[in-house]
Image 1 (cartoon, rainbow, N blue to C red):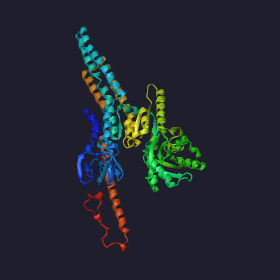
Image 2 (image 1 turned 180 degrees about the vertical axis):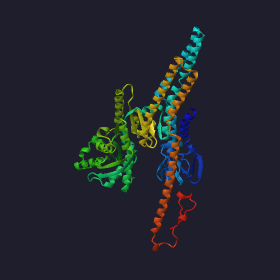
Image 3 (image 1 turned 90 degrees about the horizontal axis):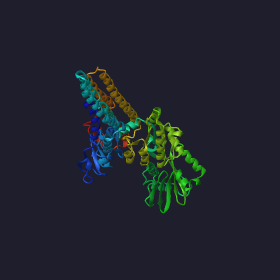
Image 4 (image 1 turned 90 degrees about the vertical axis):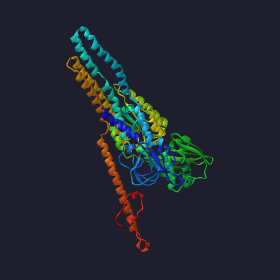
Length: 612
């Protein structure tokens, strides 16, 4: 029992060991490296992460190209390439051959690994209804059994010596076989194993109650942006309306309005304007910048009200009907491809431009939706997009029009989840719960996440969503959602097996006891044996150590292959450059030799052979 439970304990304690202890901070003035405790590193500091070092805090890469092992957070063994402008998480390890220089964006206490540790600690303290019921049952059951055994060992002596000896033996046997150890341990050991297995795969579940709820999910509502899609937008189309203002000026107003906003669409529009050499104008003053939930944004620019948003906003303002049929047809054509449509208006000029921003569907979305439907789970997509765009996205992942709810405000999503929860309560059959799951990533999803029977947040999403959700997918991979639902069902099945086996074992031995054909040693063996069997049955949820080692070997092999490929690509590029030199105009200096290559990616190579 000790060896079996140690596997789960070690699996969770290994996560706590991910917390970095120190950081190599670069002095901004002298450029010297100062070693400080990771907890003392401030936001905005520049740190150096050498090969094999843990990244102390969440941050963004300033210099270096390397690979980072994120398996501690995501459960994926394959190293991830990181270069300038890429985000990195604290607690992950630089496994490449190059030093990374990182600017921190969070303190050590607020890093991804710190959040992971807090979630695991909370999960261990959270107890399910089944676990509470078993403990409550044992509190009543145990005194009754002890009293019954006491009566069996004392009262029969009044009817003679032989009768007393017979019933005393039966009383002792009853006391042993009725011990609720196997029954009590059958539930928590299963939860601990399930939680640990999920954590090793990069899925954090806040306790056994939510793990059990996952196994009873019958309908799932997905947010679109950042959940079914990657949340990485690009400005696909932009056009002015009329000739009141030139294209560049309208783009300047659009970039100015979107720059302070936090929605992923805003960043795409600003980058799209930059691609046309249009920067955020500094000569225009922006005041009263306000978000209009579910519609867009508004502000006062140079004393004029400017609006940017969707069709719903401009219908409310009474400006949409002024569009020409040609512009409306163009807009509908853009949305049919799955893009998100928006408009911009300037006070006095009406709508002066419209644009289309498209999002990329996650590679695994279609397959995951297909698998979930095969499991008998109802799937719904919730989005604030207009109907044509929502249908275009939904069709790409295998959803019908009935499965798509579009043009929703945050409160509409909340109402949908509330109605779904109430409807499923009415559909309960024989007391079996039919849980509603909400999967989202943004701040606007938080109310719906809180109301759902079980909620899942994407690890790349907003912190509020992760705090509100019952489950967090650390690497935002939807395949992990399918995995954790299967794990929830396995947990429920294992608990039923353990409880049934515990009670059946005791009932059988009790029958032999009252028939006078059981011994004390048989009772002891059945009690201890049942406890060990339910413990081992619960521990089967943990991945085997062999599988863990295989994943590590795969990661090591892929890392070596990645380094070799990088080295081969680098020298091939250098050869190509060398042969492109015009010999007639070449300088008198000798051509570059591989021995002369000064690249820190291969600084550990003592020598290279061959020349150009």
